[in-house]
Image (cartoon, rainbow, N blue to C red; front, side):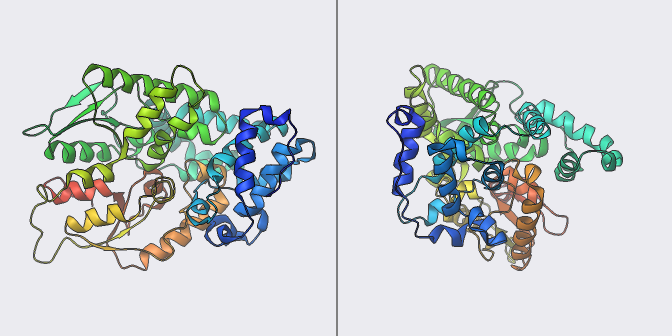
Amino acid sequence: MQTHFSATQLQDPQIAEADKILRACVHCGFCTATCPTYVMTGDERDSPRGRIWMLREILESPETVSADTGYHIDRCLGCLSCMSTCPSGVDYGHLVEIGREKLDEIVPRRFLDRMMRRMLAMTIPHAGRFHALLRLSRLARPFAALMPAQIRAALKKLPVYVPPLDKVGASTARYAASGKRVKRVALLAGCAQRAIDPEINASTIRVLNRLGVEVVVRKEAHCCGALAHHIGETKAADEAARQSLLAWNDEINAEGLDAIVVNASGCGTMVKDYGHLFKDDAQLSAIAAHISGITLDISQLLAEIGIKDIVQAAPDTGRGTIAYHSACSLQHGQKIHDLPQQLLREAGFDVRQPLNPHLCCGSAGVYNILQPEMADGLRQRKLDSLQATGAIAVAAGNIGCIAQLDETGLPVRHTVQFIDWASGGPSPL
């Protein structure tokens, strides 16, 4: 793609970065076939190729940008499926982040939209606040008809059942390895996950301890910053990321760490990108690059160590058939797709993959709250394909997908919970 940025514009590091990304795009259109929103609408403006044109306009000639541009940019899930497909290696993920930040400066959002985003950034990344909000939402549901449409839509997305708040992450703690220690890692306890499903961290720690891994959880690393980062609350995102980086760096300097382990793939994608996000930060650039370099999804660490020594013999009838939902942040953001399925098979499960596994389920952080109509369509499409596998349950690697897809008739649980079950832990079903 040709660009015509002025010398003055190119002095902005973000514009200079965007210019290089834009010039890599050849408009081949391969991305349109794998873009969830384009598949749903058939509108070129809802495709990566169309959005790249609009992003160039936002950055190159902001005076021509209208609210309609923002409408279509907001409908992007940020699933990064287009990046898995692109033969030219266009870094769409970083381009859309730059464009969204500039767009917010050009076309101010409506008051209610701004307040909704601010409220989400002030609650969900803080497990205690989010847990309290979930409990309060049950009292608000009878009055939903009296509330603005966006609030009503948000209430529908919040789970009805609220488990006790996960204690993992409430304070700095160490969980000793069983037998000889082979590794020492820091686990990101997460924010929304602690409020929605405390069993994920419990399973993660049990499995790692059985494998001889000592796990440390730092209270200060309470959130990766991804949610706030993706909805334009950059100050809150930066603060959360800085706290995590400094806490983990302290741990590295004190007793050393073999890895930072993340069991929510959306968070893992964010932490692995810290090196890029803080590349111009004099204090944190080297720390961020190191942290990103040693960050692993839980499936990566389990595959590296191997789980065969802890997996118990399966019943003669096997452990059952489960479908695997490949979270976008895992398969597109971190390029991990087959690995969790291999682990599940090693644990004795019959694993099936649904039709069109590359398409998003519609969760995408808080996309399902901010864009409920599109998210609902994608959710139903994904559920239909999962149910068609004939599985008794679904395994996934991201809390957002789990919350979006979980149904009474087809429970969705984290991959590590199935591995915990196969190695002596409680049944997740």
